[in-house]
Length: 118
Image 1: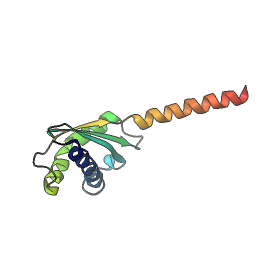
Image 2: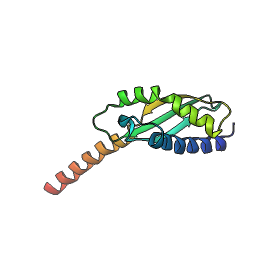
Image 3: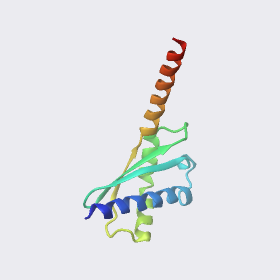
Image 4: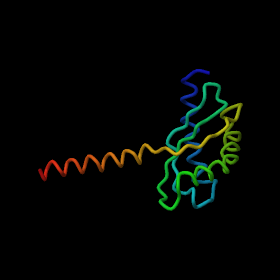
């Protein structure tokens, strides 16, 4: 499949998944989740779904399990939207990029403060 089509589908799936999490899934633990990226395999049989969250009460592991249990809802919405002939197998992965960036920001702020104090 062409890489342009895959990229377009990845963006459409991202929009669809964010809409599903906001409108279809009623579990309050999943309320603060946002999908940051979706990577389809070249044959579109598999999709890695990267997510971030702002709920400090939950862990990435517990949310990954909840999303995996809710994968049927996402697959049903893909089928309803008729985006793809084959519904991909979904793997949910916590995207720690924002968390790591926050840690780096704190380190840089600390270094900057030490420079000023020096």
